[in-house]
Every structure is written in structure tokens, then in C-alpha cells.
Image 1 (cartoon, rainbow, N blue to C red):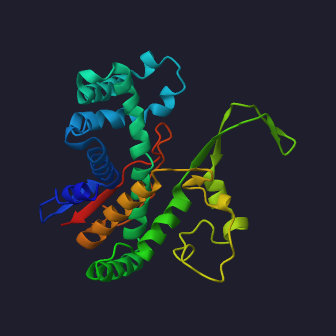
Image 2: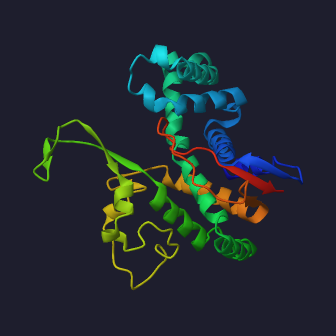
Image 3: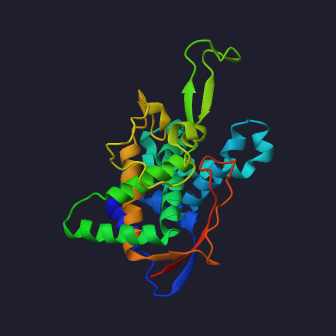
Length: 293
């Protein structure tokens, strides 16, 4: 995966300032680095039109899940899903059934849909804060010189960013339950819990709960112990996300290479918070950037 990231980051060769949409660029880089790592040289998402079709399908997935006249209202998304499925069918050749190829399409949500917005917010937080950017460059410079693999500040920024921007956790109700003598949860129901309401609760995190506090997760003997449920980005035991290390490595490697290789500035000189895409699963939209290569 790291080899593919390096290759993709070397693609821009012009020495001129080039405007790009930051989220779209991150989406492409992580889509290709992740899928090439998992599927190999015959990667079904390698073709540009197939990659585009996957994200067209994802964009309207929230509405498709409502299952209200999808053939009438969401023909484009359904056609895009079929294009991706056919690419996976060619990947599996004649050894696999058509059903397997179709099931492989939503599997890529697990690979891509948390990593891409997390990387977007991570990179936005870093490059929109000049002092933090300078500090990271200094730390990474020494990290690279001594041939180590970790950066405490880089990892801390990633965790702090996830705390602010990660959204839901999902659980299944195992038995009929009444919460607070008011809310009935039926056995078998799926509940979506607001991680953000916990992550930004001053009772858990103090008066700066909604701020990007970069020292919050650094080792501090004076810091009070926290309950596991107070930080739910990676899930809560016993259901912790198995791909968290893969995703974290990819995000940190991408950010580190951008920090050391490029200057990134917003078009118009002002960093703006993008609107959330409530129809898809990724939850963020694009943001223009300028790379000085």
C-alpha cells in the first residue's frame, strides 16, 4: 500500500501551481492505493470510468437504502453499481458467480469510506494551521533521518481529528431494552449512535471539547483515566474495527508525504469547511486546493 501511495504522489510532475479539489484528489489516491493493495495488478477499480462509477453509486447510496422506487429515481446510481459489478465479474473471471461480483461492490465501502474523509480532515487540519505544519515538518525531518517509522505529533493530530469529525457507531439490539424509562429498543433492531455527541461533550473532554487540542492524546501522567466509551472512533470493545491499523497507516503515510513534499493552499486564501453530503456514506464534499510542486 505504501509503495502505491508513493507512486500516486509522484504523478503530478508540473512545477506550476495547480488548482485541485482536495477531497476529490484524496479520494482518487486512497481509492487506488487501497484497491491496488488488496486486488493486485488486475485491480477492478483501476480503470478511471469504473472508479468514477463506484463513487457515483456511493453518492446516492443513502437514498437507495430507502428502497423507494429506486428504478425510477436512481437509475444513474443503479447503472453505476452494475458497471462496477461487471468489472469485478471480469476480475473473478468465470470461476465466480455473478452474485460474488455484486457483493464485492459494497465491500469496498469498508476499505474506502472511512479512510477518505478521515484523510481529508487530517490534511485540512494540518495545512490550515501554519504553526502545526512547521512543527510536523521539523519532527518528520528528524524522524526520517534516524529511519524511524513514527511521529508522535502526526499520530496525535490524526486521533484528534477523528475525535472531532467521525460520526456514528452502529450496534444491534440483542434483547428488548428500555432506556431511561422512556425509549424502547426492540430486539434485533439496528441503532446508530452519535459518536460526535460523546466526543464533543464537555463533561467528558472539558471546556475545549469541540477544539482540535493536539495535546489531548499525548502521554500525560496528570491526565485522568478515560472510560473506553468516551472515544469511539475505532469502535468499542468487543467490536473494534479490524482495519483501523491499515487505514491509520495509509492516512499517516499520505499526510507525511504531502507535508514533506508539497505546499497546499486553499484557492481564495481562506480554508472553508465543506458542506456534508447527507446522501452518501463518506459525509464530506470537495474542497479546492493549490499544490506548489
